[in-house]
Image (tube, rainbow, N blue to C red):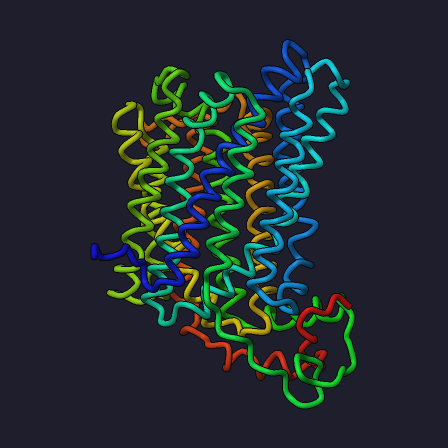
Length: 459
């Protein structure tokens, strides 16, 4: 019998397979929505760009509003059932929109169509806020040890980057040849595949709650409110110097990446002299760098440790971003962009085992629910700030230092690189030794906090 492909463990492999199919489906769906809104629902309208941006705003709103509180419920509920439930919900939402989209475009006013699109995107991203921390927690149960956890995070990152490369090219042919309905049904089917994969994962049953606490097989104990549990999670997070340090570095990194993502189209066309028709190669370069970095991350963490990997990656990625900002040729620019993405992805991957080691099981959902909205907010602020600076304050900026000329776009990107570089220097001394959940728990317990909630409770 031919050997089966196994990544770390059979259960993790099944979980990964579901994520791989679902990620491609998500990229096909998001690209299809952009095309549908731009070329059909808002075709030839002056407000078409705003309509397209509304899709992104709807997704970002769900992350910021639902994300923080979702962690409380994830910490209460059975993680595997939570993931299965969100896949059913997301698959049903996409299938429903696909059925409605069989109607002619002029059967409903544009405003109604956009409301349906935005509402679906909002609910999909809201459901994802429950799925992500539940998956994070299950991986912590399936994979042990910093090296293997970094490998797991690296495989996850590589899969997401691959979906970023594969998804959009699939979406356009599906949309223009078969129609928006079939592209949506493809995504609905991907959720079904993910559901089957998750259902096949064997997760060890959670430990029974201690005496006096509600849980399976226990008499109901006093329930605590969602707000109290959310505050308890914030206290746990805030009292861990290690978690706070990781969040600071992640936010600084998002500021750099957010500025690059916003201004890169202008930098590549104006500074690198690239035709806008070739901009797709930029996304491909980022995807290639992400895959290489994700696949290398586990090995790097095994060699030098997750803590050292974090600050070294910050230093290297910051220096490479500054170097990228000084490029004037297309080939050299693309090459540096690939190199910049590699340590950045290694950084993101190295943070996974650090988070898992610093967060106790009952707080993992809330730890992730703090990280994701904060980094999302940082990226949104960076995008708005860099766009505003480039279009107003630095619009006509033209300076030189030691004969090296600086324009508005390359200056902002260079400053973003310097911020990442300085954060790496700071991280080398400020990031404490890896803190385990057991070390963080006593400080969190110093402030009165509610008892662990009954699994499955929504109170």
